[in-house]
Length: 165
Image 1 (cartoon, rainbow, N blue to C red):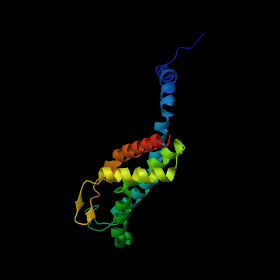
Image 2: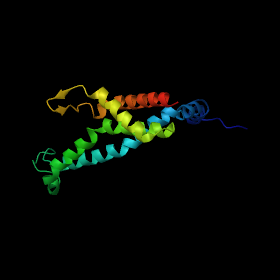
Image 3: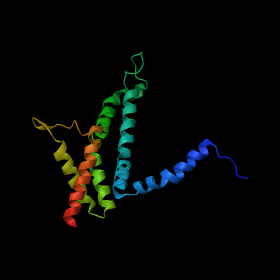
Image 4: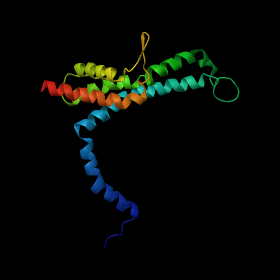
């Protein structure tokens, strides 16, 4: 005599039978591996930048109504914390362009150093839209430029692969 399955068991069986296999197949495509591994590669930058942001927040008097920092010991270093935050999070797309290119080279068995330089160069050519005096505007190097970094790195990798093959 078979037991009657509950709604949770039926949903679980449906997902395992109908959804899991196509999703697993899709996640093993080379392009999905490049995107997944590239995002994993920039995760340390995101974590380190978040830690510096937290340190900055607890070292400034901007939290609470007392007008005092939560941890006064860190107050003299607040400027350093926010600078480290800017160098990590506001440059994330720049790091991502290198990481995605390197992972592309690893997945497709191409020269990773050449692809990293090519991916960085293509990202810079696409994103550098203004020069102020002698300075380059880096407004799009943060998380907002992450998708462009991904597309430019992967696109330049495919062009490189086309030229090599």
